[in-house]
View (cartoon, rainbow, N blue to C red):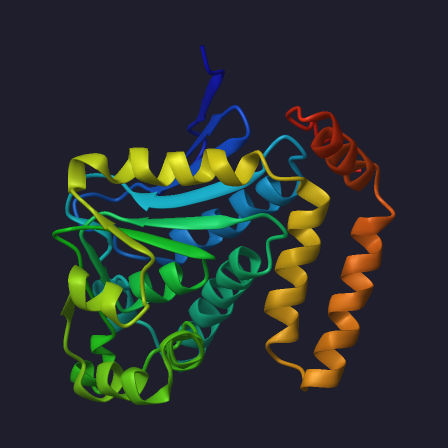
Amino acid sequence: MAEQNVTQQYNTILVEKEDQITTIYLNRPPYNPLSSELFAELSDAMDKVAQDEETRVLIITGKGDKALAAGADIKEMARLDDSEIINMNKISRQAFSKIANLDKPTIAAINGLALGGGLELALTCDFRICSENAKLGLPEINLAIIPGGGGTQRLQRLVGQAKAKELLFLGETIKAEDALAMGLVNQVVPLEELLNAAKELAKKLAEKPPLAMRMLKMAVNSGAHLDLEAALDLEFACFTTTFGSEDRKEGMQAFIEKRKPQFKGR
């Protein structure tokens, strides 16, 4: 039986660890609005995930069946002055950057609405799986503001500038099948199958060699911001790191011996 450990020292998130997979639930149902407290707790949880050598994959989802997150906590934002909103943005950016830069695969399991900051949170992950009832969008323009959690930048890098402007400028929501068609999400499944689908993907990823996975993620993510020659240099540096590893020797020997490799992350 899988070893399961649930940590509940947070007020707005719930952290669950099962073998090599950690799942973080946004725990403000039904719509899991993103508050300053939630951002701070998410940032703290990410520090722990990053330091946990046993965790090989992270899943982020929302409690309930309505939303990953329906956006920022507008009631909180409405009463903040300029300096306070700058501080809130600083906290949220820190949390989102920790997810985006985590050297382990990350999966957003979108259980319903992912609007505004909720979609921006999903965009920080490597994979996005959503339920058939999901609706996604960046409606900030309708509140006379713009996305402040990476939406204007990560979205266009993922789906292209034309589609990104369509979502950003109109502020409309799209359905799951449209998100899949434009490459915004990787998979669409029935709501009742969502978490299992995310965990199945996580298990496949957890079986991969950890060091090679770290190097692969670095090559892809960091290389995307470099010119081609610099990106190829980065790729080669990451390749040589993996080639000198114990896992590479184990992987090749297991291939020769026609057995399942036992990777140790070294």
